[in-house]
Image (cartoon, rainbow, N blue to C red; front, side, top):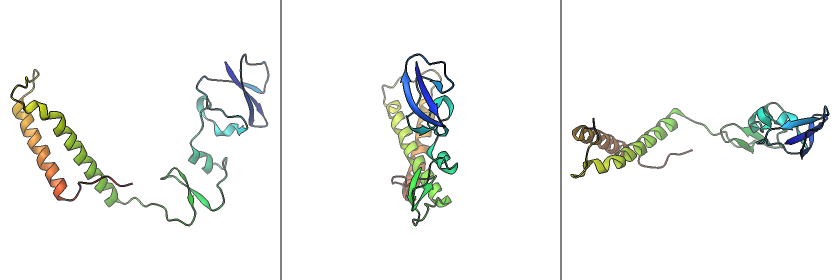
Length: 154
């Protein structure tokens, strides 16, 4: 059994053994994330560390001078930099690229079903599979023609 000693709102130490009968001792679950010399407000359910953005917003963690918290990056960034902007065009472009990856995966996963020796499963119609593959291939060709054959961007 693990336990922590709490003094003045801070975890003063973490110990292994029987939890002493003291108002300053708190039992910890096996998967705790407690670190000595940290504020107890840094921890949430089951003594797991709370998200950094939440801790910064509540003022539990101070923002270093010259930096600001960036929710998109999930980290501090220099105050004078421009915040990344997600536009609908950016999101749409990435969705089209992801769709192309999905279509390629579907085509690859059904290649074996076109072999002459393929034995269809009950309820499976090879002609329907061929039509689906044709539709997927046409959609993929159109996406490539429209310029979406690249890696998604951040």
